[in-house]
Every structure is written in structure tokens, then in C-alpha cells.
Image (cartoon, rainbow, N blue to C red; front, top):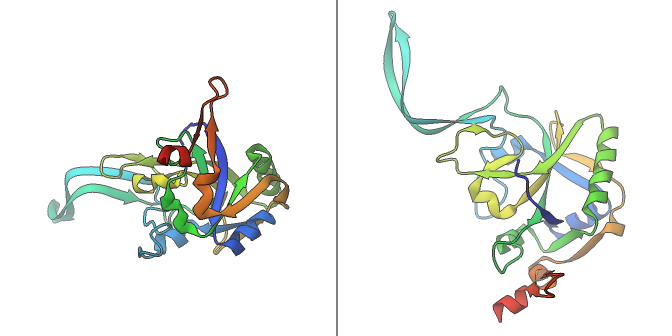
Amino acid sequence: MEKAKVLALMKFGWQEHIADFVRGTLYMNTLQYFAALETTQVTDLRADPFEGVGRLIRFDDATFSIKINDDFQPVGRIKGPVQWRPTGGIRGNVFCMYALRTPQGPQLVDELNFRFGDTFALLTDGDEFLRRVRRAGEQCGQELTYGLVGYVDERTYQGSMGVFRKRALFSYQSELRIAITPGADGPYKLHVGDLSDITISGRLAELNQLLRLEDAVRGEKTDVVQQQS
């Protein structure tokens, strides 16, 4: 997992789903659900056949053979990454959030994320939120972990994947994931208690206009309106 400064935690979605989140329900889908989704214009935010992969093994030009009469006979060639999965894949349920890290440009939140829905919820106290998550995890009978997602280029990367690594094409989602294992066969609802005291909600399309960075020493302020003027 990447180690980086997190400025804020947010959840994006449709109004009714964000309302459930603010009431304290974390809706956690299975990794298999995301892996099985067909990639369409609607689902490309979530569909990822690499979910549940344990490792990526890279072959530059390998030969696949079978042993016949004490000799290995080539039957195919492999070039590029090979997905290795434990039997049945890595199992677990995950809840995905946006972790605002040090911005790389004038847009504090990549607007590709605005396709997730029409509403955002911003945690005003991320530490308190995670404390409530840990407390709920202790009571749910599952192993609970959370962390930032690290992003890799599957064309060149070789190594472990697991719950907290994804392909670089999803890096704009800047995820923090909360995971439970071994999880459930279907969606799991983790109840962490009412969050209305530590959340601010609003229209997702207007999010960047509501955010600002201010330099405490020099008194400089950065927001989207100033950058676009």
C-alpha cells in the first residue's frame, strides 16, 4: 500500500446511498462482484477482472508445453502478464472511499469520479470515522483491515496484488478501502453508527468549487475558481 498524506476522506454516490452511509451503513460488495461485472459505459467505474488476483506474473516470451512420452511438446506461447489466483480467488467484501491526497493539478478531485452519482459526503474527522469502523469490526466476527490502494501498470508490474492494489487506469479514484475477510457470499452491511455528526454532504458536481487549500504561512489560497479564472 502507498504511504501518503490524506487530506480528507469522502464517499461518492447517489443521494439515497449517501443517506444510508451518513446513517452509518457501509455497504460492502464482494471482490467477485467487481471481477464479474462486464465493462460497459455504465459499469467501467467498478468493473475490474483483476479483482481477487493474488499476483501478476510477467512473461516476455514463454512457451506452454505438455509432457508426452517423456518429452515436453509446445502447445502455446505466453507474452505479457498472467493473473495468478488462489483457488476461488481472494475472498472478501470491500467498502470503497475517495482519499484526497496532495493534488497534482488545479482540480482537487478528478471529475471522472463525478460519474459515481449525484452526492458526496465528506468526513470532517477521518480519525474518528476509522475509530468507529474499527469498533464495528471488532463486533462483526470478521477480520477487518483498511488502507490506501496502490496503483500499478499491469504491462510492466510483477508482484503481489490482493485487496489493496489495482491497475493504474483506476488511479483517479484514489481509493481508501475497508475490507472484511473472509467476507460473505453476497453484499455485507457493516453498521458503524450514525455519522451525521462528522459528515458534510452536498452536490457532487459542485464539489471542487467547495474545496480550498490555504497556505498557513504565506496566506495563499488555492481553489478551483481561482485556477480557472
